[in-house]
Amino acid sequence: MNLIWTNLRVPVEENERELTLLVARKLKVPQMSISNLQILRRSVDARKKPQLFFSYTLRFSLEIPYKEMNRVLRRVPDLKPEPQGKPVPLFQPTKKLGHRPIIVGAGPAGYFAALALGKKGYAPIVLERGDDVETRTKKVEAFWKTGQLDCESNVQFGEGGAGTFSDGKLTTRIADPRIAEVLEAFVEQGAPPEILFLAKAHIGTDRLRVVTQGLREKIKALGGEVRFRTQFTGLQLQNGRITGVQINHSEVIPAEALILAIGHSARETYRLLLKQGVHLESKPFAIGLRVEHPQELVNLSQYGVEHHDKLGPADYQLTYQDSSTGRGAYAFCMCPGGKVVAAASEEGRVVTNGMSEFRRDSGVANSALVVTVGREDFRGNDPLSGVEFQQYWEHQAFLAGGKNYNAPAQSVRDFLAKRVSGEFPLQSSYAPGIKAVDLHSVLPQEVGDVLERALLAFDQKIHGFAGDMGTLTGIETRTSAPVRMTRDKTGEALKFPGLFPAGEGAGYAGGIMSAAVDGIRCAEQLMAQYYPAE
Image (cartoon, rainbow, N blue to C red; front, side):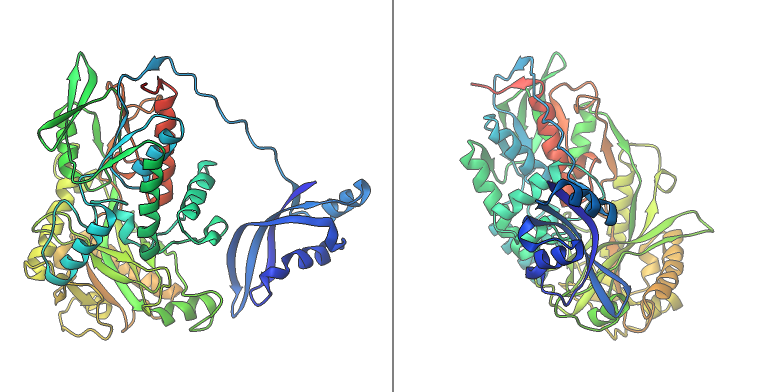
């Protein structure tokens, strides 16, 4: 019988290679009766720190007599027979494409939509406004060194999407069977196999770039095509239906079906779609600052020790509900052993983000500390009022930083005291550089006030969080899309048959995993309606 054992706690010092023996001992069965043991999930249980445990979910086969099996199942409440999988739905399209489907955007949503279509013979064309990941990386690194920004190829735009320059986190709040498909595709292209079961898996920006190249080659091997420096600049319409896609303001590619996976920063594309009649609506998001601390401070709080060879750098999740304003504040995109990076995609604006390589060995932990904002904070009721809100505050950060893409910065102590001393016990990792300012000046007043109270609340959970060794840089605005492209039950944009909005840019995902899953889902919805072109 195939079984699933959840919540099996094992001291981290135990040898994971001996799990089969450990399971046999706990179940009081012969080791030889256990086979095909697989780790489905592993998380850290630090509730009794410095005593640390791994909490496992395991799948394995157990061959013992029926009566003994019943006794084992009664004795171990967290041990259950493996449930039967749901049947895979069959596509029953009624229309045939005259041309290859087009995907706009080579981030997780776009690439996984392309993989799903490629596997079924649709031979999609992927259009990406930025460069391939190799060229893009060189341009991003040059921007960090010199402040010379390429508005088409940067931390936000280019192959791999915004997540390419991040921690490569693979955590998500969604529960979807497509998650396994995404993880397996990452492993196939060189991601570490343990991402298949780690509760807080990450790839790291360095390995994610290699994986992205592999996904591109897989799409091409399946008959797909990927075009770089190719910007979507308009829909060609006839009688309310899509007949083609304009690129680079000149060429038109014939098409009846289009997946839009544009990412959360394609602001001019939002304006273009709104002008062409696509239904957009403003949505809430969050803005704030990046905070950095010595990694040892976080490790000590989370593990009870400053360093742990087996667990690596610790992370954290922090939330705060402000009673006086009703706003939520939270840590976002936490990067253990990482650095703060310049993430601007438009001239005259400063944006921060966080990034870690696979080893997470910088010695510094960073995270966004952000506060929710919504329509009541934006000017007017325009669907793009949230975009304009982002742009305004990013420009204020640009001016405060010295108009050269340096970031405004302040120590946590100075931020709480509303003073500018220019002293940084922990120097910011942000490049090109920083300028000491009062960060309240680059935030809406209410956001700054809530962040002050949140920092003090977080200090109660992680001692020293609001202490002398914290450094803040601003501004963090790209937490999620400020816009949603409304979809109907077929996954298409309202009154635009053949147009499938996908991923973060459509307002239906947040992070690498949920964007990739949404890309697959949109591809399935396309295939449910259309046969591939011959």
